[in-house]
Length: 224
Ligand SMILES: Nc1ncnc2c1ncn2[C@@H]1O[C@H](COP(=O)(O)OP(=O)(O)OP(=O)(O)O)[C@@H](O)[C@H]1O
Ligand SMILES: [Mg+2]
Image 1: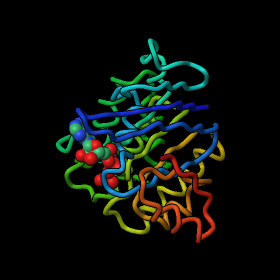
Image 2: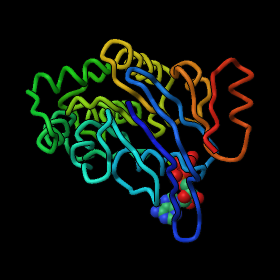
Image 3: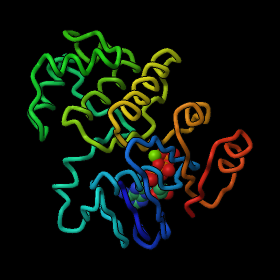
């Protein structure tokens, strides 16, 4: 279980996250929504151990972040808002490169299988020849190499076609429901949020998203 207590984040004098507390249980797919600049990426970076909160406490499976960041990091997969892969390498070379950096060792056939499960069939092609949707899938596959229990996805379906989106949704649901992975997902596409997420946390003062989703039957919890 991910447990976040009274997290604050300031950049200089400007406060981005104010007293954020929530929990996420294993196997849940949770949406994180809010307007541009609400602090979604900042919060995901803090959960991913890539940024530090100004104050507050976090724990994953009762392991506190404080003093144990490396241990916690091994359990987390993170898909950043900007695609982060090597354009001049093939899909295979990217998977092998990131496997070498990963905490768990995987065979080449297991890496290939990971891509196939995401309907990413191109293996020998250079990344710069792939469509945006395929690159997104590769980024997600890379985040799963070390078999993390918590997967954080920051707008992973921006600019991709409906078919690829649905393939990604289908795969994420499978990861949560069959493998018990916990998923936190940010998106500005509310259809996606309603289709994918068990419930949704809403960041920021503006109640627009909260009202929009609640009116359509989605369970929404305001975080600040
Ligand atoms: N490194 C930084 N230094 C200073 N301010 C920052 C930094 N990173 C983010 N911010 C500011 O913090 C606020 C929250 O940014 P963040 O990227 O977390 O929002 P977001 O909800 O992910 O927005 P978007 O929907 O556009 O992706 C913004 O006002 C942003 O300008
Ligand atoms: Mg963002």
